[in-house]
Image (cartoon, rainbow over the protein chains, first blue to last red):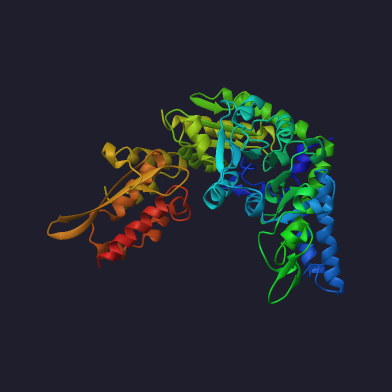
Length: 405
Length: 137
C-alpha cells in the first residue's frame, strides 16, 4: 500500500527549510527530487564499481559494463519494449528528439515532406523540427488543441496529407496535463504510413507506459523527471526502424571499423552512443526506475490521482484565479494565473513561504499564444506531494493575492 | 528616493511580506513607457516576466549622464527596476562603474532576486547598464 509519509522519508531534500519554512516542492514537472536510494547508489557505484564501459578487459570495466547494461534492461522492462537494442541512452529527452530529427534528415525526409506537431508541444519537440525545416525543407503542420488540451483524431486527420511522414506529439502536456488519446492517433498514423514519436517527459512518471500497447515508433523521456539523475534520457525506437538509421554523433564505441579513408558503424544501440556514455547517470536511472516501479506497484498512481483531485478542488476556491486545463482534475499539473498579479510576482512571494512553483512560458510559447497569455504559474505534483503541501500552497497563494488588492 | 532611503525602509520592515508589499508599492512609481516603446528592440531577454529597457544620454548640470527608463509586466519586477534605476540612473558612466551593485543589493537581501537569475531579465538589464557605461569611459 502506497504511503506518502513513508515515501517522503525517502527524499532527504524534503527535510530542508527554505527561509526558515519547511520546503513545499511543487515543481516536479520541471525536475523531480531524488530518493536516497538513487543518491546512495550513485555514490556507492563510484566508490566500488566504476570504470569506463565496454572497453576494458579488466575487472572494474566489466563490473561497470554490467551495471550500465543492466540499467538498459531495466528501461526495456519498464516501458515493455521488445528488445534491449531498442533502448538508447541519451542526454535527455531533448537530445533524443534531436537525435531522431537529425538522423532521419539523412535519408528519410525529403523536401516538402510534412511533420505534424501540436500547439501544446514543449520547445524541445518544436525546435529540432524547425532545424529540419531549414535543413531539408520539411513543412511543419500545426494542430491546435482545445482549451483543455485535448486533441482529437479528427484534428490529426484533417492535418494529414499525402506528404505527411511524421507526427511528433506529447503524451501529456507539461502545462495543461491533458491526457491524449495516443493509441488511436498512432493506429491512424500507421494506416497511413506515418511514423509517430511520443514525448513522454511528463507522461512517463504519471501514467502506465507500455511500448507494445502504445505501438509508437519512437518514445523519449528524461531521467531527471523520473526521480533519476540529470544528464541522462532515453530514446526508444522500434528495432526495425532504428537499425537502419544513420548515426548522428561520431566517435567512441559507435564504430565498427575506422580507416584513413572510411568508417563503418556499430549496430544499435552503440551506433547512437558516441563517446564515453553517461555511465553514472544511466546506472542512476536504472535505480530510479527500480524505486519508481516499486512505488507504482504500491499504488502510486492512485495516490497522485487523489492529490491532484484535492489540489484542483482547493485551487478552484481561491479568489481571482484562472486555472488552465481545469477540467483535467487528475492532472498532476495545476497551471493558473491570478487577476491583477503576474505569475512571476506570485512565484516570488510564495517562495518566501518555502513554496517552490514555476512561473513563465514553460518552454511552450506557441501554447501560451494559443491560450492568449504571456506566462502562467504552474504547481506540479510528484510522488511525495501530500495534502499538507497543497494546504500550505493554497494559504500562501491566498495571502500573496491580497498584496495586489 | 535614494538607495539609502530604500535600504533604511527595508531595515525597518523586518518581514518579507511587508518588504514585497513595499517593492510592489515603489514599482507603482515607475513611469510607463510610451506605447510604441514596448517593442522587441527594447525588450530584454527573460522568460518569467517581460522587461523593456531604454538607455538615453542626457546632460544634467553640465555632466554627460546616462538615464534609464524601463517597465515590466510583473509588479515585483517593476519595483526591482525602480531600485536598479535609483542606483544607476542619471549618473556619469564613471560613477556607474564605481557602484558595488552586488554589495548594495546584498544590503537589501535582493541579490538572489536580481543577480543570479536570468529569468526576470534584470541581470540582462544590469549587464546592459554596465556595458553602456563602459563604452563611454
